[in-house]
Image 1 (cartoon, rainbow, N blue to C red):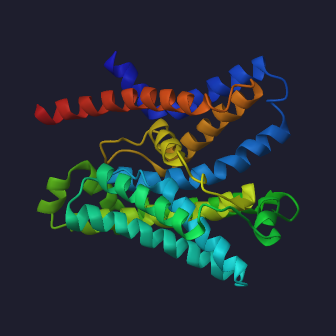
Image 2: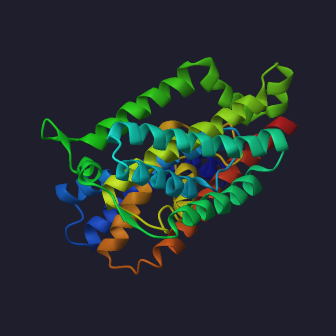
Length: 317
């Protein structure tokens, strides 16, 4: 039984994706079409970016409950700067920087003050979203065509703009986590903070960087989401951190740190979006979908936890 759990934990997202495609392909009309495939890929981009951000903090044995709130607050910056007449490029840079700043606040609470990741990001989730609602008075706003047009922009008339952007982002992050000393330290700290400290690694700095990176990716995600929905309102980003955690765990990223791959997190996002799209085809109530996501998270955590327990038994021996 343990071997089955270990095998599933390494390939869970792939097998769930295959089963999902086959199931919805046979039970719904129009699911296995090129148009729907493009729609799934397009919708995966936003959650894919968030899942990669969640991957960075989970790798160092952390969690970021405030990610959806950072998306919300960063979107306010994007909206306000564009309304003030600033260019899209400048507004986008500012949005990502604000996301990084909010991520650094999470990192400060965790590494300097010593608050646990869950409590720190939960507290800041309330603060970030509350501050955003206070600034906007909970009023919504429409993004200009310059932003909305990005969702339909295709390079050479074929390749979606955001597909190219997330591919470049993935490659850069892949190189960072797998080919640089700084990136590999994320794995070292997550695997064993005690060993990392004995090796002379500044574990607090590594953890701080992880939350800054997560914040930056949440800020970037807010730009993608803005182009897709065209509006900013008080509910933007709500429960999106749950989906990001689910996608990461589904992709094999351990909640216990030190285990997982960037590609796995991205594949988890694709799998989760495929499931959500299939539920729409089945005409499942939108209010039921978050509950299904929670069940998927529970299932994925059960598999992940079993694999971790095996690792611990080996260390004890």
